[in-house]
Image (cartoon, rainbow, N blue to C red; front, side, top):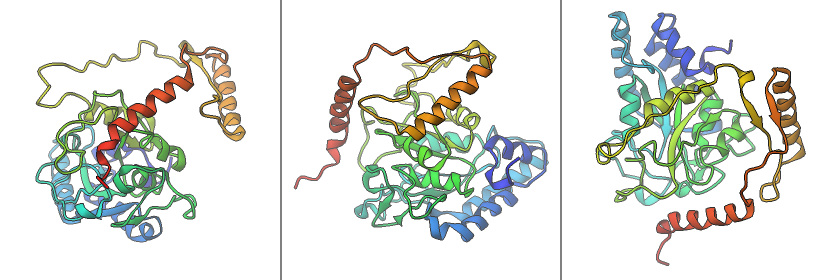
Length: 328
């Protein structure tokens, strides 16, 4: 099993419930690691330690009474800087918003807190969340913990780097052009871009923005796929404004065993060519699945023109992000 700071959120919460580790003890473990390693990585860029320790102490008292707040009880976590959190700035890396301290939490933040999380800090982003690296003039550059001369991806680069470096138990990002998917790929962790609309983005916006952006989503990032499922269940669902109009009912998988699945593999595409080294790992995965009696199909293709799909996506992306452009 990995050492304590690198364990999955599920394992950490289990240890808390079984009283193998205290909530404050676990929080201090991550804070000590941040003191030791964050200066070279620069993943965690703001912390509210006093409030986090207060909440961790309450979580420890609750455990002693047998009162479990939820599936994340006592779990220390960080969150992408773009989410509103009371007591922490929301800037999106924009110097003009350096002093923007929101008065309300983002809805996803409230849901994570209700599930028992101890939210202690924020992770770095590029300017306007608009790059595949993570730098802004307020907080500087975030580096990849595997090799600090390389980037961690973006725009949720700070989140992925913090998870990979064992500086936090869980995180959450946002995605309009791979910002949840690209950083975990660079850093070797997990991210899930949910279906558009199933997780409310309310409170994950620049000051003055009240309408959700087209094609943009928010979603979980973690060190395990199982943690992604747990966090998505917590974050998902309508907000108060449209809550009467729809309900989220995600069906559980009907298949129980791996060999019951049929899996189609696409190794590369003319619109997104994949390096041979990466293709090799995909082929190794396909071989592994075959040995587990999974039906793997390599020639099935969706009836979609990838060139046209990419063209449509770019038009949607530019439409959704042009509002951020200056008038000059």
